[in-house]
Length: 203
Image (tube, rainbow, N blue to C red; front, side):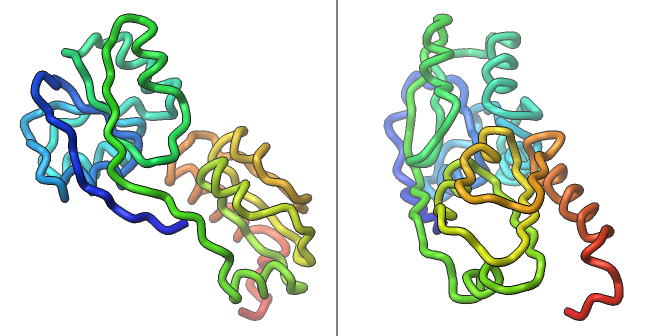
């Protein structure tokens, strides 16, 4: 996917707290010159780090959309809230919070445009060497398509929903222990330490 920022914010009059579910949302908010005085909740630690680096006061839910909704319900931050997000989003966060009396507006500030696989990627998937395929969202898994591939694919999914969205057979499917980059990187590193990626294998 290609991330294209569209940093336009609605009126923030009355907004008391922000919600970010990706670092891209933070980047677009900063590009739109959003005020740094509003506190924010983030879906995970990586997004929280991006928010804090931008000068925002961030509270991380440390997980996925479910964890974020649960943390906001628990903390009862000042509302109304504004969910700053991409055009494609999962978790129904505004709807779920609205159902318990927490008003949440939405601002779409970037787009995740689908791209075709590069020729290099196609060559790897059609080759005879094993391929590690990290998948960071159900949409990215679905965009891989359904055509069979020749290579033995070792997929690493950030969540069960992401694993279920992949539409072709793989040699192995691994789901990260936690829905964040660090857990994904650990699975990939562990795979690289096992057969068939031994030290004698030519690069």
